[in-house]
Length: 423
Ligand code: GLC
Ligand code: MG
Image 1 (cartoon, rainbow, N blue to C red):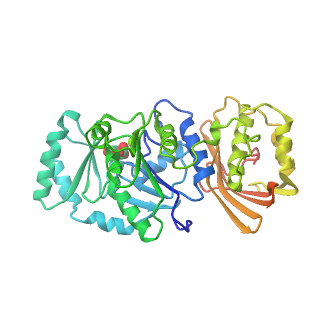
Image 2 (image 1 turned 180 degrees about the vertical axis):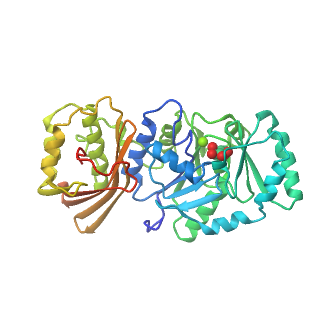
Image 3 (image 1 turned 60 degrees about the vertical axis):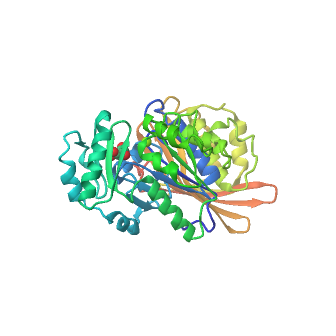
């Protein structure tokens, strides 16, 4: 969050499973990729992305390996009982202290063991401040009431959350996704960085609390679960800051950005020909997002094999521009575009996707920009990632000129030596 020097324009706080990430109808991650390019092009530089998930960190990392998830600024894991910051996920120790208040894991274990209706979830889901079970829906009311009473008698203050029609979590009373968001907002306010707008996004029971935080917009994606919709019918219907989207998952998040007029809502992935639509390229981060999208479409053979495209790209590269390949080899930038020209359609039907993450542009001296990003490439199940630095110059009315590009294999890349990598 340190990179922002002023209040974020938008903070998105989104659940992952069945909200940001589609598990049923979209194995090409279409809507997630649409959200990703919108975020990187229009919001990354001045906004905050927060993921708030029921998953523990290890299970989150698993999901991140399987799906094209962006790197959030803040990650809230284990149903709002852990908060961590940045790519390296530095835990908030202060939040741990808060979670310890009136909490004793041993006692919760002891008491929950007395309920035959509760089946413990896998070991990987059990965390210091979260015990998770499966329970038959018909038993939830009874069990919840009884468990609250028993734990209160033993001096604890806890919270029970029912989600997805099957999962029951026991947390400290001060925990949960809503409390974690309230804590974050307070922290940001103290730092003078209270977001201008906040949008919360969810689909199930453990997301309910997010919608109860004052002054936030909320979207329940179209595929929201019964327990969230029931809460909405009883408590949220009169709140015009909450919508039930028409679109599923990340599509619903984009829909809400448009509905509440929170900023740009057109994903570059929904624009078919952006080489002809060079509208408001005020930030060279846009040029990078769009270039790699062009690159994906070119190799998937989704755009016409037309020399005008590569010609126009070459024209925006300095004739002396250099590309440092992740292998260390130096090539000419224009030569690299020529080489790309030969790969039209080579990834057709190969489940090839390209996405950019953490695209950040800085103007170093007047008219000189450095854009840093992670460029991901996936073919089938194989993923590669290069940390990429692009230097641009800009002259009045002439747009951005690519001066040089440098890439190194990212730590997260599954492949770290590949002579077929183009750029
Ligand atoms: C996630 C967690 C699970 C929890 C559920 C509902 O699926 O992995 O442990 O019970 O969210 O909060
Ligand atoms: Mg969910």
